[in-house]
Image 1 (cartoon, rainbow, N blue to C red):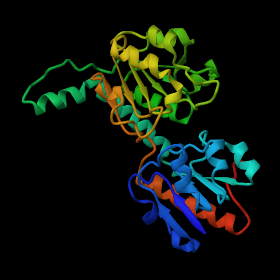
Image 2 (image 1 turned 60 degrees about the vertical axis):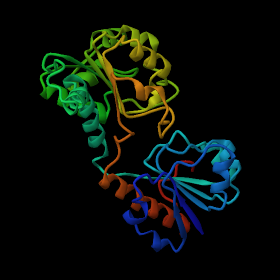
Image 3 (image 1 turned 90 degrees about the vertical axis):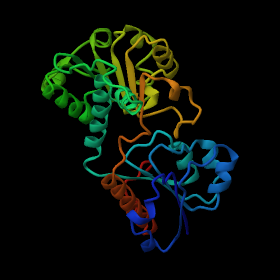
Image 4 (image 1 turned 30 degrees about the vertical axis):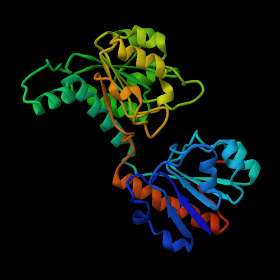
Length: 317
C-alpha cells in the first residue's frame, strides 16, 4: 500500500507519528503540488492520501483522475476543499484526524499578535530601528477602543476575553448571533452596520460556508472607520479579497492582519505583499508542534482503523 502525506512544509510528518506501524510505503511531500494534470500524475500511484487541512483541494476532476485512491484522510474535522459527493460515488472513504486541544487557543493568540502589532505599529518600528531611526510613529492604546468580534464561537470568545482584559469595549456580530448568547460571553451584540461602522478593530472568527462567503463585502469595508483594523485568521473566503485590497491600497481603512489567503501558499509575486499597511503571516493560526503531533498520530490511527475494516471519523458515511 502506498500512502502520500501532502503539504508537509515543516518536514515533520514522518517523525511525529509511527507510520512504520502501517507496513506501507509512505511518501511525504514538502512543497505544494502543482495544480492541474501534473498534480493528478503525481498522486495517481497512491492508495491513501493524507491532506493537511484545506491546503490541497480535491475537486471532482482530481478525484476522477486518481484510480488507485481508496482512502482520503484530512487533518482536522472539517474540510470544504474535498468533494465528498465525488468521493462517495467512487467508494473512497474520507476520514478526519483531529488536532490537539490547544489549537483554538493558538489561533486566538495569533489573532492577538496581529492586533497588538497593528495598534503598536510593531513592523514599522522594527524596520525603522534597523535603519537607525527612532520613534517614527505614535502607538495606540487598546483600553477604551472598540473591538469587534465577528463570530462568537470558541475562538471568538477567547479573543473577546482578552479584549475585555485590556479594557476594550468588546462587541460582536454574526448572522446567527443572539443578544442572549453575546451577553453570556460578556459582550454586546450589534447589528451589522453598527458593528462595522463603530469598531476600531475587527477580528474574524467565522466558519466559511456559502452563507458566510464574502460576509465582509465592499459595503462592510466601506462602513469601517479610516483608522480601523481588520484581522483575519479564519478563512480568506469570508472577505471579498478585491474589495479588501482596494480598501487597503487606497487607505480607506487603517490596515489589516492577514493569516489566510485565497490561494496558499501565497504567490511570491502577489500584490498584497507590497502593501505597507498589512501584516502577513503564512497561515500560522493552527501551526504548533502539539497540534501537528496530534494530526499525524490521529491520521495513522485513521489509516489503521480503515485497514482493519472499522474506519473512524468518517465524513462521507
